[in-house]
Image (cartoon, rainbow, N blue to C red; front, side, top):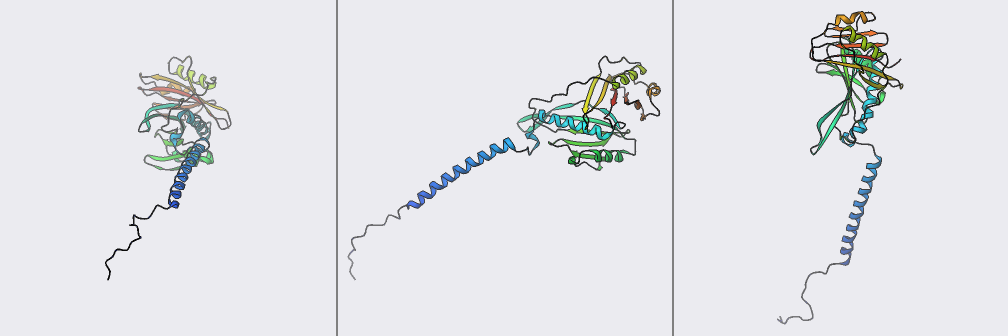
Amino acid sequence: MSGAVQTGWAPSTGPATPAPARRWRRGLLIGAVAWAVLLAALTWMSVRNDPPTVREQRSLDQAGPVVDRAAGELAGAAGATGLLELGPPQIVTGCRVTPLADGAALRREVGVLAPVGTERAVLTGIAERLPASWRARVGPGRNGPVLRADAGEFVAVEGRPTGDGRVRLTADSGCRRVGSGYVTAPTAAAGEEAAALSAALRALDRPADAAPELITATCPGGALARTARSVAGPGPAASTGALAPLADGTPLLDHPPVYAYRAGPVTVLADLAPDAGRLVATVGCPG
């Protein structure tokens, strides 16, 4: 066998890179850029047009009108004879929207008459009169029945017995970005509730407020429910017996230091605790 080396062949240096592979990588890069542009466009359109999907996407100034409307719906569902008081808007600061962003929550309360033993029936009746879209339900809680509902825009509604013939309904925005802040509704003119409050203060031998705090909520039909409020502050507890002559018939509540009665269309609630006495007079939603 010959040992001569065959000539005419160049040593192999591996296959050359085919042109189709370069075109494939270029197409992949163009596709990735186009996909990124499409995602950015879809995100921009979603932010502009889609409803919020989490509470943090709505600021406190946006939640304020929803909480106010919820207070009016709760007042209407309570009925003119069941509504005891409208609480003033409360803004609670110091919560965290994210680990890096502070926020605040808006809360409104509505006090309703519920004689001891009737709390569940009262809450069930209120739930049935609330808008169907709220999906209001009454279920068991740790200390009694609890009403829960969703007023929309991530505003939660709850109702719980207070143990003294009342239930407290709340509309709560949860922690939000502050935005431009909560704006209170324009102050309405005082009516019969202010006169009833002055009469109660005189009966208790306390000075009448020149301009009591007036709290309102817009009823479902557009009228206003109104509460005139006087905070007596710390001092000796007064006797609820002085209010009995002002009541039309039997009192609604008589659990000292808490006393409530009707005077015409006005419901008067006196909480005469020595550390935080207060009087409120309320006119509820019509109908």
